[in-house]
Image 1 (cartoon, rainbow, N blue to C red):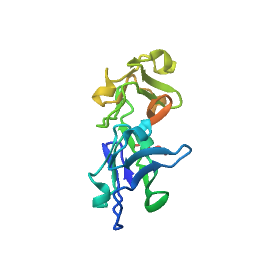
Image 2 (tube, rainbow, N blue to C red):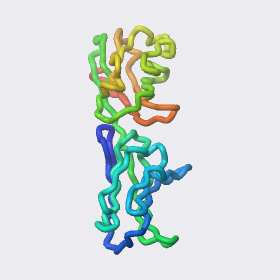
Image 3 (cartoon, rainbow, N blue to C red):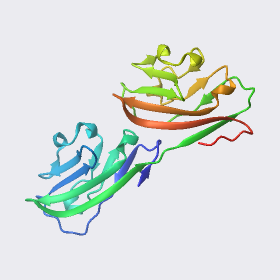
Image 4 (tube, one colour):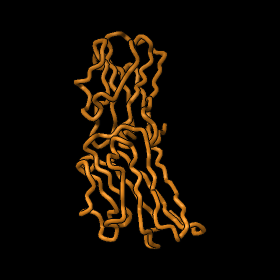
Length: 221
């Protein structure tokens, strides 16, 4: 399975033909260095207190999953950090009754922007509809920090000196969903690969690559 940056949610499918007792427990977990409880259905109801905080308020199963035998889980996307391996296990009294492993991957995108060499202003685009946390930071970088939006405002003292006074973003990018970067007084040295990272506490939740090149001159990634 794959999901892209404009997706709002994805569904991990699991439909079984096995007869499941109504007192069974359903657990969706995500594998990794630290296994996380994504969603639990037990005693006839969802158990939000049992899931990892990272997934609070973002998961949903169908009503009466044990009766319908549809154990699929829908997750509202938080970012490309949601990619990974998910395992659904149905068990009772220590016995595994059914199990499914689903691999979910983020489909990274790369955008190419071509302009004439004489152009002085260019926009590196990124607009999307996914929700972002209010405390997220947005960092545009190439071989240095090009622009940083953090703590609700731009941080010009953090960007490299060669870009100071030449970059601009939306005043409220996290709310508007417009993370595009406008670069002015374009020079030949500005052409190349740019990366925009959206992160919280150094955990990258979204990432985009933009290739800025002059018309007639193809660059390799």
